[in-house]
Picture 1 (cartoon, rainbow, N blue to C red):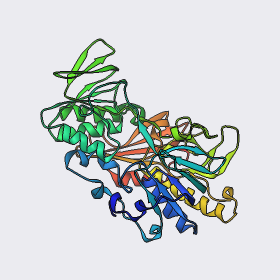
Picture 2: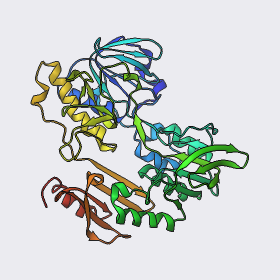
Picture 3: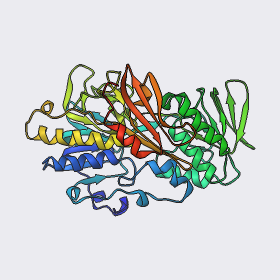
Picture 4: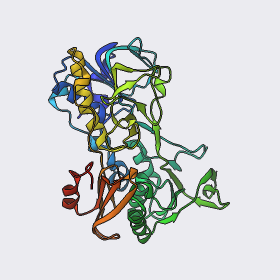
Length: 412
């Protein structure tokens, strides 16, 4: 895949397209492919803030912090089905007028569409702080990962604020490079909410064994630049001084550009089961769809009316539904006659030599039990809610996990 500067579409500035996709990541690419597979023959324009064509993001918190990688190393191949797709990169959308079927760039260029796909993903949460950028990091883009890697070296003190998967993966990667790592989280045990107490404790024990200092039940109040490093003021009155800070505090939907539109934005952009954007005034936008982790979607496994699925599989799974819906709508067919979104969520994580694979929604379980193996080693854990298996997580033991996958959603 060519770099953005070499991409022929960078020479054009279209003023309209049959399908406009805002966001140029994996979800955008898979949506364009799915629309073409479903028979959509109209023009497709993808508009993205980053300067790179779509690239794989999971390595950013893993191998990209250990080895020098570029967006070209992580780029997804462009299949022939999307050879005619226009890519308008390094371009931010400032606002949308959904009633007039128009989006406007930060350069005040107006672009009309017949169909719009919202694929802008999420934005990392940040603490209010004036700490210098080379000492304060997030890991969301390839530039973020490169900056963090260049700014840290063996022996340097790094604090990671946030005990989710990104925080834990960054901790493992920086320890592999010899950094002195402290993981600060507000809960009792990192990852407990997702994995349950026992499996989360086993994973934390491994981090401690590898030399990571865990500061549980600790909330950061302030970050201050000092000559000797970044001073972190904690809620319990202590101050920790480190050389660099990584904020892994979760994310919010990248939906500011929809502020003036008639849409529902909560934890994500709310949709109906066919991923059509819901109107704040009631009903849905028949020509506006949402893909990826910016979407807040109904799901048959969830105990909530709708849920955000912040997993690598979400852009791919939602794109299949949206591509088919756009093609059907363009033919004048009823979108509601198509299968609704119901893909089984999945995620994986690599930390040290541990590989963890999950299917379903373990975070919404009211009970979990060890099915095979033992905590602290390879194991499989099942997660249920009201007697119904809704998730399975395995550390190793992939074949056992896969054997249970098809039982998710059934009564146990």
